[in-house]
Length: 187
Image: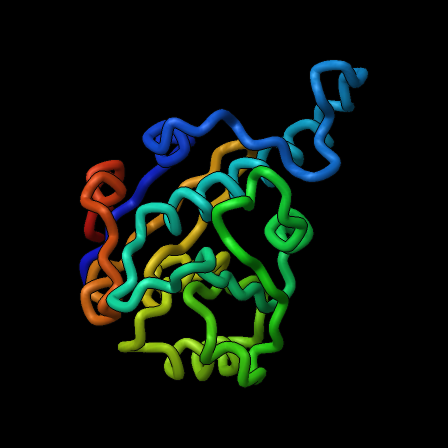
């Protein structure tokens, strides 16, 4: 499998987007939050920025026009509220919460997978394999099941890319996203 790793906010900077403010995040006029809450808020904002950046650089074989792509969120994730909230940070994507066995998964242009039991996650990903669905997983250390696998460590949000799954999906990911990443060393 070909996997590539990317760390930091490079994707958002490439998109030339200003840093997104997560729902409930303090503005410049608000008093400073405690360090832990501020770090969590930054991480949430970075996850939203990375997800919307990835989807902004994806091209589906049959564009989801005239509406923005539908991002389906499933599993337990601390980022669900920000991904589903809408607002300015998510203005380029429609988002909906779905259960892993929901028939609506078949209508998704992108699938964000949080914590799920391994067999449930595997079955759901097998159902979209080979279809034009961008898959973004939170917990897949070797990135064997999804196109993009997020890795949030502290205030840094990085991701791995599985080039094999991307190639089989029919979704084109802009080369700039792939160039952001560095090759992961093989053990």
